[in-house]
Length: 264
Image (cartoon, rainbow, N blue to C red; front, side):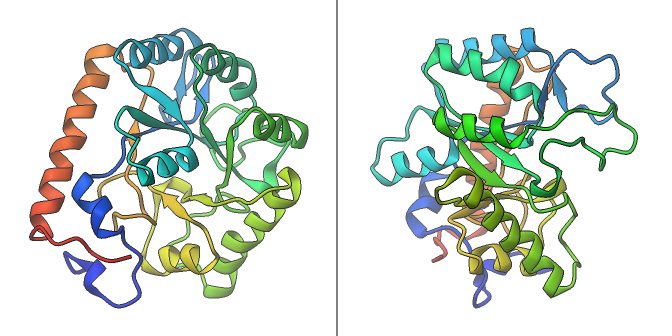
């Protein structure tokens, strides 16, 4: 794969202004619960999560959804905002996350696997079975100001998926969610953080405003936004270090582009 695929016609990337400002700081969570087994390191205890949010607030950060983060950045007001994202749609978000965020005036984005709503995380073969949000809980999250985004129909890794199935995973999941919440769904999250050029193009062509991935990969941009993994070991000093590390990665990414912003 070329080092700068954004130079190829048609590949979605961030606008030049966004490139110069650097990527927004986005934290990636999954489940918040007390678990004895956590082989994929996807679970943060309620106590640790509360401490992490307390640290953000004490440092002057405000947690928001990615939808609101982009709106604020477009208005030049996103300086101390951090995106909070929760993948997979675990039901423990409703019990352990919503009250903590409400106490600080924070919101977040929940990325949901539409064919699994009200079910379990069957894709995690070695992990504990976890209950997923019900349709009613999804509507309550949306009513509380959370952004609802798509995590595909089935939590299938998208690279290499045939074009017709790729379109179903991307478009049909959005259609289902919009029917549930009665409003536009503009965000997509790649299952497992796995993204290739066809997947990124499919998301853009389906009309999404953005998509989140995980690392600072060669496709990084508005349709493959990098995020910062947060785990149960992450206290104040680790969060601070992760924030500084992203800043360094932004500098390196900009140098690799030769200081040129790539048009979306």
